[in-house]
Image 1 (cartoon, helix red, strand yellow):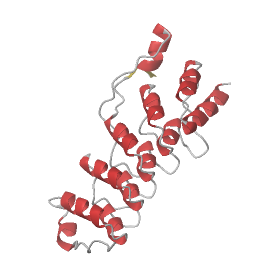
Image 2 (image 1 turned 60 degrees about the horizontal axis):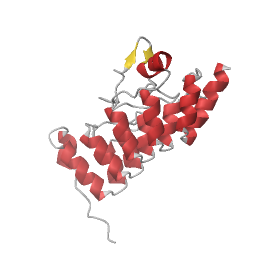
Image 3 (image 1 turned 180 degrees about the horizontal axis):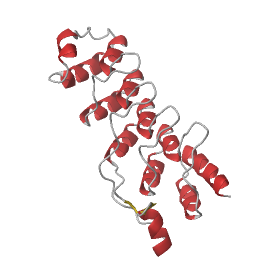
Image 4 (image 1 turned 60 degrees about the vertical axis):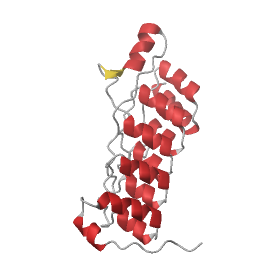
Length: 207
């Protein structure tokens, strides 16, 4: 029964069905994962369901959950260009959990209702997956400019190397992405002398 509820919770998260998620959680649905280690939060983040992400976070699901390839919900949201979700994940913390249960679930038992707790400090912006890719690597790879700007503003490391020795700056160079190169070079100044000294921005593409 619990396993079935967990599978239904995964599907509801994938589809952004907030009310269904609340009902399933009230009925004791566990925060399970699929065979790839993908949690409800990963799915909601990947498919751009902002309100669903918020509901799950407020229920106490871990924002730092990892798939079998070490991807976090932040990786998913960044790779697919969901800037509002990236922003939400960065700002959220686990301090609204208590006693092994989320305060949301405790309030269900006490008050038979939901109390939404404030979202505070957030996910590790420089978390790496199995390929040593950060959220910034993925956002740059897919040219999601708004996500890149948000991640850099939140302290993402523009000089972090992935498994193939590539930094987000290198990826932007490979793609001849002038706007992102400018943003990253400004960030790199004072942090990585190597990139500060060798980067030469290509001219903007002719339109």
